[in-house]
Image 1 (cartoon, helix red, strand yellow):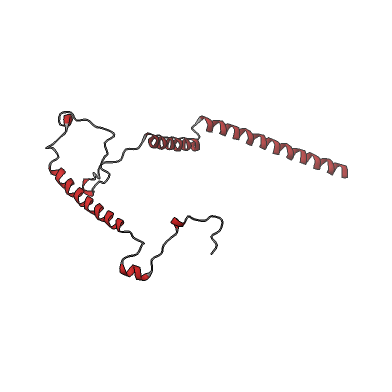
Image 2 (cartoon, rainbow, N blue to C red):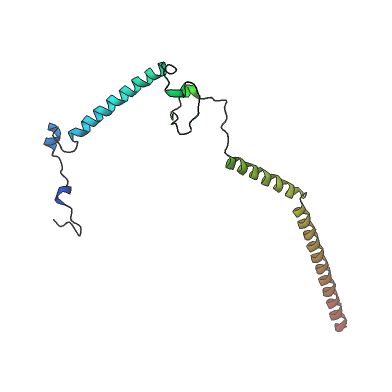
Length: 162
């Protein structure tokens, strides 16, 4: 069978297990070393759980060096990642970061400004309203002038017919 342009090395060929091998437990799909590693991991987990329980009992008993004398908060020390439900303080609110606080303040300021803008209390709103009044006045004068010209034109036509 053709394998195309790239040919694999003879050591990289796959070996598939037959159903008989799988039933007998001698299949190549799961090497024996994996089973040993899984057993070792389970044993380590059990021993860690036991050591954690023991360390909780002996928490204040043994401290190395000056740890018992000086209390230092080391930022590089790994903190416990899992927090149990009973340890969570529900009344404590999470503090926002500086960026989040500034973003919220910016949004509130923008909303406040837009409210004042709608009411016409800001400097920009006053200028806009003045401009709007001026354009309305100019349009009204232009419309009035057009009407006068139209009536004058109609009068000329009516006088020319007579």
